Structures are given as C-alpha cells and as structure tokens.
Image (tube, rainbow, N blue to C red; front, side, top):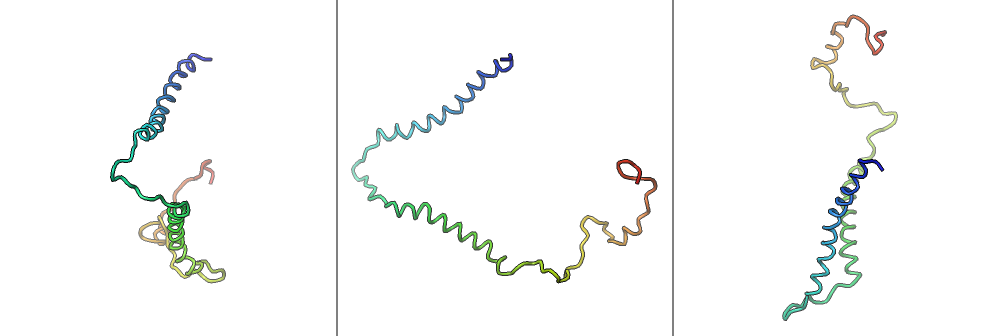
Length: 123
C-alpha cells in the first residue's frame, strides 16, 4: 500500500458514511412517524381503492398519455408519406450554405492563391 492510498482510504470511508447517513435518516423517519400515528375522532380516510383501480390509475393513465403523445407525434409524418421519391428530380432551388455573400459568381472571380497547399505543401 502506498503512502497516498493509505491517506486516501479514511477519506473514502468518511465520504461513504457521509453519503449514506442521510439515506439512513430518510428510511428511519417514516417508521418513527408510524409508531405515533393514531386515528383521532373525525379522522376517517374512507375505504381504500382496489388493486384493479390502483393499476388503472398508476399504470393505465400514464400509459394512455404516452400513447396519445406518440400518436400525435408520429401521425402527421405517417399521413404525408415519404419525402424522398426515387426517380423524381429535385424540385427545390440549390442553396449554398457558408458561401460568399455575393453568390457563386464571387467564388469564380476570386484571385488564385500562389504557392502550394496541403499538409505536405506539395499540392
């Protein structure tokens, strides 16, 4: 064991305990609350819900919302059809991104650079 790792181990243990202590407190607090929880006069929560109702509420509703969002997302694209059609020419005008502001003619009128280029300077 090196000197550095021998010094580092107590810090690791301290960090681990510091991270686990709040988790221990969180798990112990509900059980401590339950020990003192009593029903008082007028405190009637009513009958609980059935397992089927719980599954419908906590699984069915989120699943239904997810399906509705998926349908609303994919339906417009599915009804339009594909944009790429093999054999059909391109209908849009060409666009040059990042080119000179004067257009393609300005690139043809640019003066030629002297010398060679490339990484090896042999082009």
